[in-house]
Amino acid sequence: MSEFISYLFAIFVVTPLQAELSQRLQGVPSQELVEAGKACISVEAPELLRYAQENWGWAAANAIGVSAGLVDPMTLLPQGNENCRLVIQSLAVEGSRNA
Image 1 (tube, rainbow, N blue to C red):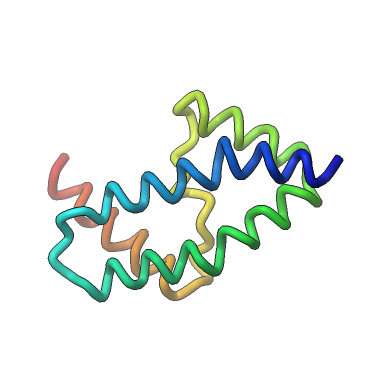
Image 2: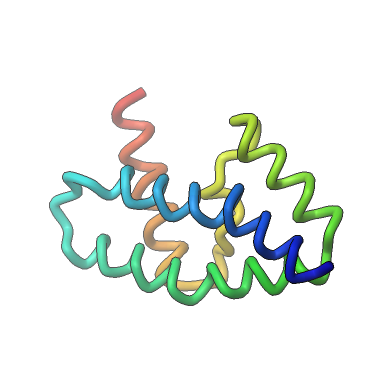
């Protein structure tokens, strides 16, 4: 059952998260930031899947939230990962400039 939950979480959360991050990083002039985004996803995607297997309620709530557009998948990335923190902070600054 946990493999099935992990599979659904990958489809409804991890894949959109990767797509969202790639989309937001398109046109970013900093190659360092693009590399940080790739490193963040490569480390944290498996961790998110593991956590989803162990916490079905969390996985279901976030899968529904991301699918319905109620949860920004970027909020699932941990700030404790240096690469994720760099990307999240940079995108937040960029977003505030465009607002």
